[in-house]
Image (tube, rainbow, N blue to C red):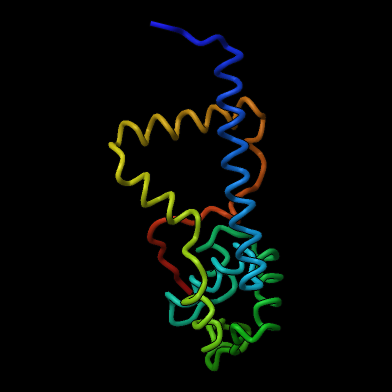
Amino acid sequence: MTTESGNDYEYRIMRALRRVIRAVHIYSKKLNSEFGLTTPQLLCLRALAEADRLTLTALAKGVNLGTSTANGIIDRLEAKGYLTRTRSVEDHRKVYLEISPSGREIILDAPSLLQHKLSESLSKLPESEQMTIADSLEQIVKLMEAEKLDVSANLFTGEQSYKN
């Protein structure tokens, strides 16, 4: 039985992390060059397609974005004609977001989110393996002192419910 030195494990870990980062980068560049969208923009459009209509706050919560970040994304999507804002008849302070026909069209053409592909693959693994992977990745985050980084803009997997 052979054992690997700490340096070999370190190399394998760093190589795997670089490959993950590279895959995310390639996906993001492809999405942007082919569809003119960022991953957070696609997340927002898909959330709006699933819901009848959403407020900005509900959308931001549903896709794990800050309200100000979501507002900037919504401004850009509205400028591209992918969504509309409609003021509530009952409460003029409320503004609802609705996906437009061109917004629906682009999400039908856009590739599936990288996170969804990963989620599907992970769900096929035994729960014990999923737990091991999650624990290991969380340990890497701690080792890199990256716990406080806000990366939620790109985390969206599984079923979400949106409430106005």
